[in-house]
Amino acid sequence: MDGSSAINYPSLAREVHCHLLSSFTLQLWDIVVTSQSEVEHIWPKPWNSFFKWLYLFLRYFSLATQAFHQFAVPHLNSGKALESGCFAWYVYTAFLAQAHTSAIEIILACRVYALFNKSRRIAIILGSLMTLEYIILVIVICGYFRSIPLIPYCILSKPPNQIIYHAIAVVVAQSTLLGLALMKHILARRTGWGRTPLVSVLIRDGTATYVIICVIFMFIGAFCELRDERVIITFFWLITITSSCGCRLIVNMQRLAVAEKSVHCSPITSEIEVELSFQYM
Image (cartoon, rainbow, N blue to C red; front, side, top):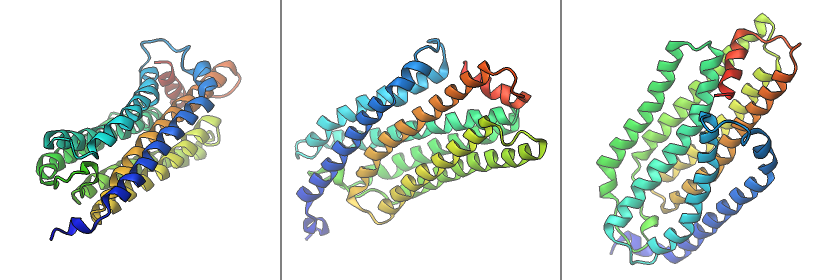
């Protein structure tokens, strides 16, 4: 007898659907409560602004995918999905999760890059870490996703525990981003501008994002290590949480950039000016 026969898949499917609907509802609520900030700080930016498009991706592309999941997941759990459709779902979730994680990392990397006065070495380090995440992800997909057992409830298949290596790569990248920001903060305090609003926002947002992303990927790693069928739950929450965090990171910096621009008497170093220049791209 297959060990999977002892698993109550209908109950797990209901649990997954509850999380799917909850994450979608939270994302809708987040859009409503932040709509005023979006109108004030995002829509006035030109359409050639990289951060405007990144915001729209995190906000509305994420919303569209979560809406799509409301229809896709019941079909995948109906027992009518083809094997190719299930495999496509596994690949889709892996790359979509990575895309949202990368969006957060790009925002934080631009801040760190600016704080280090556009250091080429910093750009290479951060770019290499983010590229490594994709390399590991592709290796895991090509090497292990085909071995995922096919069952009628295809989104509840046991995940390959090799995904933990990708989760570790994400945590390393996030730790590097936070570590560099903290190092610059310490150096800045010695020169007298470590307590400026901009640096405070960088450290506050960076630390909060680090904790949130690390907790999510620790859960992903734990689910995969235990071969828990409910790992898909972390995917739905990852989309919602990265959407919320990324949009707030962009809005917070844009809000501060506008405030700094209106207060010409505030002393701003060249490093700060570089950071502000990113907000008007």
